[in-house]
Length: 372
Ligand SMILES: [Zn+2]
Image 1 (cartoon, rainbow, N blue to C red):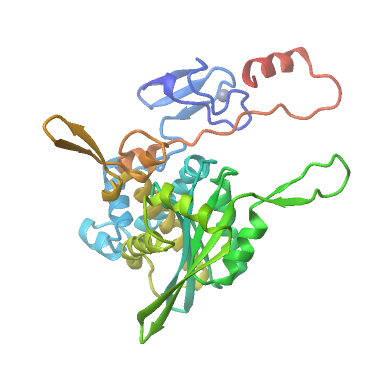
Image 2 (cartoon, rainbow, N blue to C red; image 1 turned 90 degrees about the vertical axis):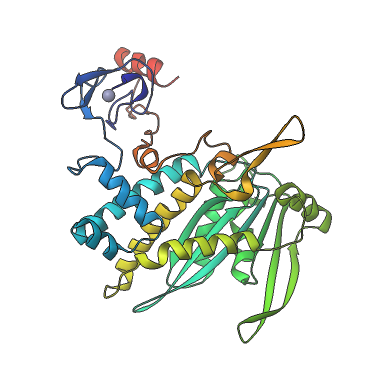
């Protein structure tokens, strides 16, 4: 137990979420509990992880979640390990929710995205069809998030674009998608910035500079692609060419990278949807399964095309493998699934409660110490 690497989980504590400030001590080695000396509350070592309050052996949970993340059917796990089906489902839900939190904390951070590709998958389920829209940063193959909806409409794409925007800096950006009209509308409405005027009322929204939108429309005859039409909806050709060079080295406007990712998700999620349930319930399960698959893809799997060569003497090369998260500079090593499930998302910094009048001396001291 290392008190220097953990933070206080109490939402009311001024020291919440802050690591290495010397406020945490070991409360009990036997019970694996820490104590925060600012709020005098104790908490378990596993607080904020998937393993919190689970009585099962950690290794078994990690193994089951890993199997789920690679598309192993729940029934297979139930039969092979003799677990209750509801237990496996609840672990999957827990892991999915946890991964979504990790994703929001680490991936949805502003970065220079360069080229982004988006696409939707049609998921056939008993009781209807669900659309799964996802986006990917091309240069790092980083999965930027996904959204599920019963309808393939502007609302679905707009929610996806808000996710992309949360991870984007106001820099030149190329967006490649299929011929779906909703993308153009959604991108134009989401990638805008308010212009502060100092006057009352909602400020005017100004579109971001350098946002290019390209469409790849495929013509099919009997489920076979017979022709590809590439359209530039917004931006100029030199801008697009510069962004393509930066993201993929060479090549033309395409959606090949997101299509490859879709195939990965299809193979790892198909088995997760069970039959005989209400569609809404399945959508929630699918959402959690998607975040589990996506986070394991981003953090725990090396991507063949992301490896970099280190040139050694005598024309020899050494290949260094990388995960999308390493390529994006989020982490410096391959995470194990256990590491992903144990990652504790820190609470946001404490803000002093709003009160009338001047703050007391004690409050002032707390503000000075914990909100620099
Ligand atoms: Zn505390």
